[in-house]
Length: 441
Image (cartoon, rainbow, N blue to C red):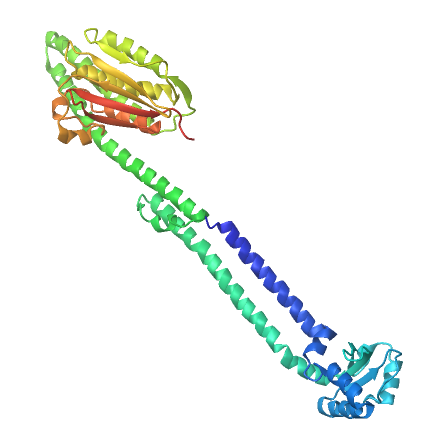
């Protein structure tokens, strides 16, 4: 992963290194004697030439060389030996030397005094060369020689600006895309592929975009499902309310004896309406935060549901195939409601004399709970729609409100699993609930 942290750190480190290096370079260029001795065109390599002339041609020719330098470059030169005695006359006038001796603060002098030690590689003798350059001459050279450090500083500033712009754009552009995505999400106009390109980045912003994209898709799915649920709820509530309204109208006009016969019908319609509202609320709660997870003993839950089913359908046989006492982690009430709906759905369509088979298959990381009946099954063209709220296949009309399988599917998804619905190869219908033993936080 190309970390944004290291990118920022490297850019800042490079900027500091460039500024520090160029500051040191400029300081040496403007203030240090060694820089002048090494780069002034009149002094560069002068010590070697003067000493070589002195040792090969003698003091007279050396003096002529110093006078030519003085006339051409306006530089006064003295050469001293190890004892501090001059080896040639030099070009520095005695009156100027006396004036310099009287001035304790050399800053008041009209020239700059530079010294350089040089050891002859031929003879091994050491010499001290003293140069005196007038300040106007030195300032004129500075104006030309300082151009390239300033140019280097300008180039460095341009490079640093480009690096800063690239770094700024690499951060602000993804953030601007995220801002627009947040705005679209707030306006319920979020497009699932709006951050697809940004999520392919291999840094922190790419990870953030991927997480945000998944969150946006999840929220858009929840919003769509809630809207669809409201439409379905409004449609489903119309039928029992219309029947109640008709029954009440008949009761108002009926004779007392006929009115007594209508009260059971009114009570039945109220019970149906209450059951429908209860299932709608149960489905809505599955989208809310369910709270802390708890250990679940699956066998105990299935045994309890089997005993409850015997009370409702004593003529039906429920065959439980579960080895040991498998454990998993989740929300007991939610899982019990899902399994109860699957079991009730199987009992509703299972013919007398054939058992409802509940089978638990255990794997190291997952559990599968299958509920099979021996009923007519469901036509293949309707299998894909099973589990959608309020959907009922043609042969299921009048059997519930079409929310049982939807509740079971939502419960399985909240546990990190899924619900598979289909016809059994040997006949009947089978619903398989797949659940992980533990749920990732």
